[in-house]
Length: 300
Image (cartoon, rainbow, N blue to C red; front, side, top):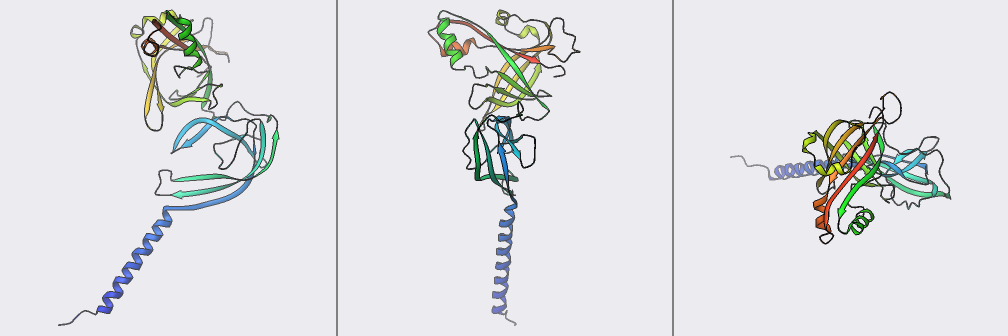
């Protein structure tokens, strides 16, 4: 009977171990690697503008840096620069590095890391020729006006607290929508972070008979052409919540729809009586209704 060569068995084992080990090492290197590196200079504007930032693959409306790259006359969006301490009111000239990564083990498959290398200059000035925002052409920024009715025994106290504390949080100066009205952002120019909330917009048609009578306390101007319920789905990273408003689209008196001016509006109503009663139990709250009026551009 032939016996197996113990030396051959040992060598086979060692060879298999080395191959597996090398394969694991190669897979590890493939998991995350640098795909590109470059250094260049940027001009950073003296104020930040509304644009897009990306977190975990999600697009968020945020204040971003407005920058010009070498030789460019156009301001572009830049969301983050590591180790860069920014002071509003100053225009910077900086040198940064871009390191691009590819990582098959990460949710963000590919990304680029921007890091400050050197501040070349810092000058107190207002940057010239800045756009209103750094959004894509598919997005519009629309002004909003607020009207409200507060019926309460202690109306002055309730009104003061509601207005000063920015409660409820959906009271804002401007709305941003995409052309399809499926994405939104609520803006407050007095807010340091600018964006109060952003996310997806869900719209559904609803009969006028289903709206609260309290809305009549804030009478609309114009002819109602559509009635909907708008649910603003706000992604708070850890969970998703929704703010619901009732939307009336109205055509303004005398508008033809053929000019470049605003020809219609959306009136967003919400009766928040019960929430305010709970917040101010001793104020004798009877009714609290808010309406935010959005000026629509022709073709919006």
